[in-house]
Image (tube, rainbow, N blue to C red; front, side, top):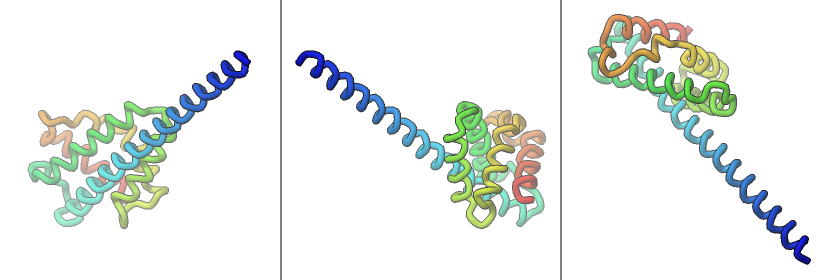
Length: 146
């Protein structure tokens, strides 16, 4: 009788641990999708600014905020490097945020490009309006829009 009780206790513990792991993965995917959507919206806004003026002016506060969003997204992707589930959810969100510009396939490419763009990762509040930051953002947007 004690063995059966011990067995049920072990099974209950295992079931709770499994549910906790699944919930954690689902939460991570939700965070990734939301972050990707925010990034996609920033990409779309920067692309529209580029289309309107032929360049992205980082002295414009909206463009600057969107460039910083790209830098934050780069950092988030670096922190989750090797987590394919996170990257896939991020790309799905990016496609949603940049509807009309990115498809799911091109969002995956854009996510990989962003994850490997250390120039975008070097953008921060202290140097965001520098020429190197401007060049990095312009190159990324042109690459994504191809």
